[in-house]
Image 1 (cartoon, one colour):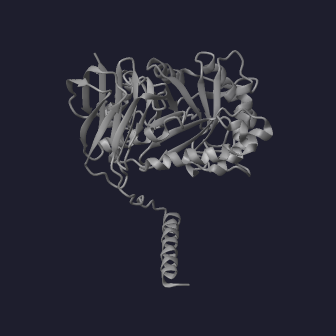
Image 2: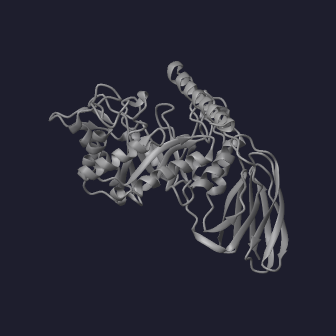
Image 3: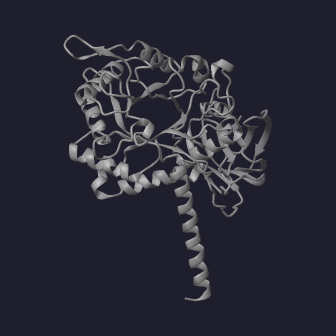
Length: 464
């Protein structure tokens, strides 16, 4: 072995030892060490928008939001007027069966069947509907009437009947409701469910599907899972196997992803694509892929009150266009007493409901509809997407790099434009709009742009 090979061997060995040490520290001491980002070679941006090359309709994967169990009662009501401005398609709720949240299960009737009261949960779902969204219900957690605790194995007959009645109740009123079986089942706080043994998530799913299938007089709906806390292709493959073996309905697969690196989100999708490319999983080739919680950090973090979270959001959406079906940003509003570290896009009403940076980005995106356009020349920091509708072409860009962005100057050109006069709108997410008239000749125009770290910029060209 020559000197170069020995040096390489030593370097690889030390790297493995370091990674093993990190894992041991996290496991033994219960510590979560900061994320380590590998430095990527810098690639300058030179953006080219080909307005005459359409890529199909712009997929609106972003107008979905989740609300966690930050407190008891109707957490959506104080936010309705704000959420209407975002034109959400779905709002996700978990904790829907907890005794101390909505009190759906009130005990048993004389004959032994479940006694249900939908009043409190209905109040929230009506408010969700008033925003323009539909409910996305995470079927969690166990009421005391059917299980020893919120996270224990239930009486399976009761669980099946509870799901049947839930689907009958909400899908009789609303079409295309999504039902997601459980929430982060593998985590100890939510049950430490496995894909085997005495707490087998597959049974949880099987009986839920059986109950939903018994529902009568309902609109079309979708059911799926497993809402794991991060992508795990073993969980997904075992769920696929079980659904095939038991002939179970599986309309979508869902997982959560918190990571500062947008590429990690794309890797999740690629793992699923590898699975569904296997001949035995052919029936799942076009299954819906839904991230039912996402953001830069799974821990409460002041980043959610900064422009970094908005910049991160653009970078992730850019990665997942035409790859995922829905992304549920977590969450609608902070819990009480969280100061500037809550996950919400809105602050809690105890300090006055106020929009945070991601809210303003959602407000921009609310009106983004049209035909997606080809964008070339993205760099390691500057990424984005473009679309057009009627007479307007829009380009949305962000300067985001998880290891730390730098200010960057670059060119952005539009080709394939009709000649004539245009109104140019140029606006940073937190800046004043700049408007001017410009003349387009020879089918194109070029702009010199500079973007500061973690900024978001939109350019709109509207032909007179």
